[in-house]
Image 1 (cartoon, one colour):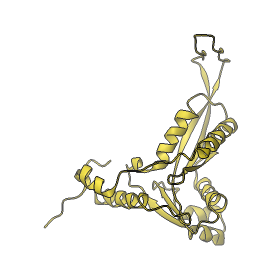
Image 2 (spheres, helix red, strand yellow; image 1 turned 60 degrees about the horizontal axis):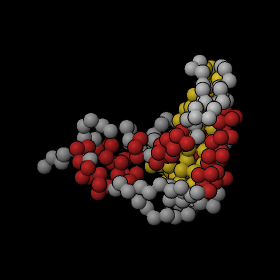
Image 3 (cartoon, one colour; image 1 turned 90 degrees about the vertical axis):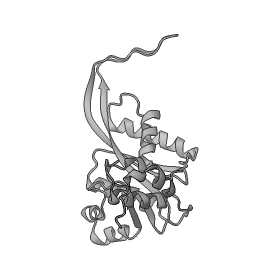
Image 4 (tube, rainbow, N blue to C red; image 1 turned 135 degrees about the vertical axis):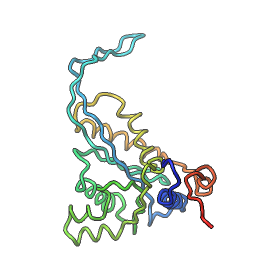
Length: 220
């Protein structure tokens, strides 16, 4: 959060909070999007299997094999998430993930209400770098974008879902992207089957009380 009052911060914060308290609308699903890098790490020596009364033993030496990127899109009110593992997190990668959401995950939705941070890849312009103009425009017209403020990652529910993914699925050494993708896919299917939702409670009214220090003073 900013150290001093910021009209830009609270304006973006209140915009996102308003979106979070809209009623569920299948024609306009609200989806939070975020991404994260995961270090790929291989074992140098095969871990010793666990024995009765003891845990498995893992060598402290390991081999770094680069990183993989994880795109996370979560629809909190439906308990639905879509996760893709990619090599990178470029404009093209983001654009292709958005296309997948619009054409495969939410083909019947009139508009996808998208909440995400304002990373420089998260723009309509990225669609035009990935697709022909007609395709890019068709995708763009089905997006309603709301950006979280700078230093406001706590407002993005996809970040919460990424933390759950890392704790439940990626809390160990994984050597390659293909295996990571298969593990993430299994986690995604299991969690979606449970329809695990996120019940967001914090409101604009709460923010104006608990985060009052962030609001600029009004000059008479």
